[in-house]
Image (cartoon, rainbow, N blue to C red; front, side, top):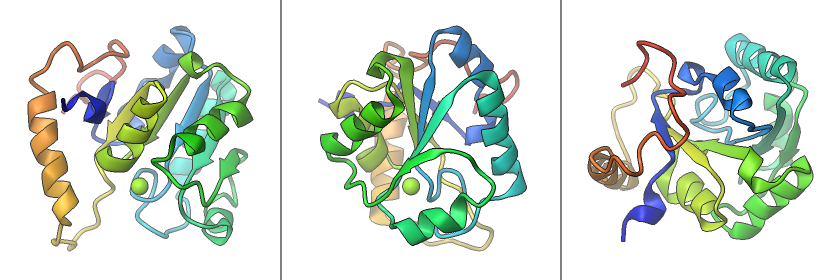
Length: 180
Ligand SMILES: [Mg+2]
């Protein structure tokens, strides 16, 4: 019953993922949520994120940013990033994910979606059978209030992590020593 909320993998952030291993497994497209996945909500990109995208391009990945936020927000973010994007995406609608896959020009089996929200990014990707990774949301020092949805996520995550059939479905792709 909860399976639709289960990601293929859970990572503490986008930097602990071994993208080279994903590439070696045949994955060619990466679909990223922006807000609270790559940077804190509404913020421009960071040097570390810019470097990550440059690295992914060197590895041979096609990338796409899939966001429910608007074009202005994307423009602020992609100043130093060369990537496809879709804004005002209406996630978790299947249409958003199908449009992303189509824009990448790859079969969905060769794409991985990454996002911080179980009830948007994970459920949306699972809805179209797209492999996906849930990353822990970007935390900001001093930010204490968590929305109700985050507590629900934690509860589902607690159960998910005991369902070995569902965890680590992309293989051993968390860098050594970085598994949470
Ligand atoms: Mg997000």
